[in-house]
Amino acid sequence: MQYFVVMIDYGRRGREAIVDPEVTRREVISRIASGEYRNISFIHEIADSCVDDITAEILAEAALPDIADAGADLQANRFDHIRDLRKHERV
Image 1 (cartoon, rainbow, N blue to C red):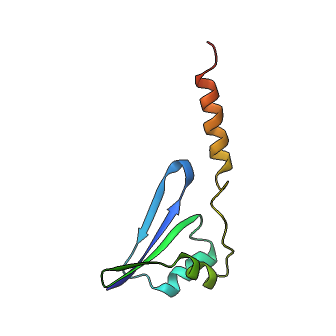
Image 2: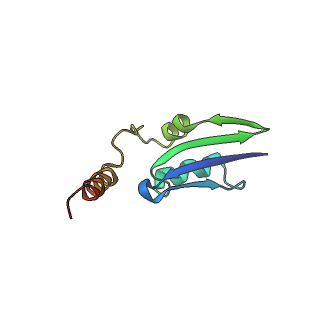
């Protein structure tokens, strides 16, 4: 049995792992290219008790640039910083 795990990162709202044994490699690529899957943390291929990280391969096939994780969620970081500042302000 072979299937794919697509981990999507929603920032402060959490993460979601999309696992569907009926989704093929071609369909994963199609969903990435169409924009249905965004903010992908990783894509794993699971086949015969082996796990392979195929994120770079799939993104290359979908013709999307590999975007670095650093600074990906700047708005959430700003909100966290503002919240931390409010915790320490005088009342």
